[in-house]
Image (cartoon, rainbow over all chains, first blue to last red; front, side, top):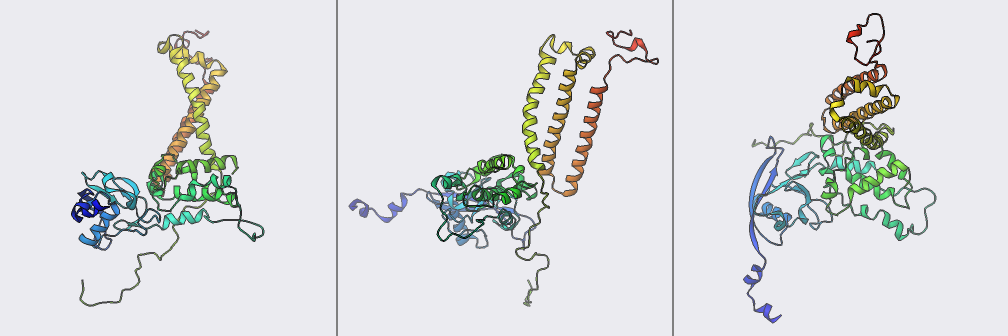
Length: 252
Length: 160
């Protein structure tokens, strides 16, 4: 401890490497711009900074009109999904030093959803698909007087898909969703999976019927973009395949 | 920018918040399920049928040099090869057409474009399948009749 207090504050701060990075952002202001365009911003950052910190620096110190969503800033709320260097990621979970700072880092809004301003997109189509798969517990009979019990084994069955934070990184990385936006998309299927395979739920048939239709699981081309994009590491393509399997065998 | 501040009116061009996002009507059929299943099953069958076809035509016997009119006529004299070629034609055409149908669904952006591309696809499918089936069933290397020129018939025909 004594040695640490001896060190000057400058040298302690210098322990974290700092470097300059160019952030190339896809800007669009519907009130002024005809079309989206790229703009470069140079920021000086530390090795511990994430892309979200760089975006904050740009917004707070360089251009206050830059618009993006973020809430918790710790990878839990799912507000700041964006297309970083061509891949969908959360800005708060992407360390700048991992993004090859020698080249400009491109930041775009997620694809397939209407852009409202800069990095903010209209999430309504995404959430409508989510609502259509009925992501809530459906039961029949009397309400139990205590909690609905479930074995650890039954809970394990859908554990992976409970991790979804609805950031839309998967759905907006799906080439089928990009084309006409009619496909339900990986996120809706993941959240249907979470209830279809829940032993306490009785609405599996309703959800499977929704996903059996033209815009449901059969439009999946198993390109694995969604599994790669998921910031929570959910095996999305596997979950979709399990829903397909349940539809084929009519067994959950 | 005008100096006079006016009360902003309702923006007519912008939809009301939470307006429903238009999704195409549900069909309530198992068509897509069966189409998906068919692709897997026909794919497996086609691997056997096509590789068998290539092996018999190009590897067995004299290989590529044996393939001529007489070779095809000889093959189609047997009902086994007729069924083989017929199922290959139908499965390959259905498999391919369904594949292109999915691609059109995925990539056509406007409903009109999608409809007409699919129509062209289905017409091409029907023509190929009808013509192919007709040839396999009505193929006769040695037609008999009064108006047939016997010298134009292939050498293995008894009429010659």
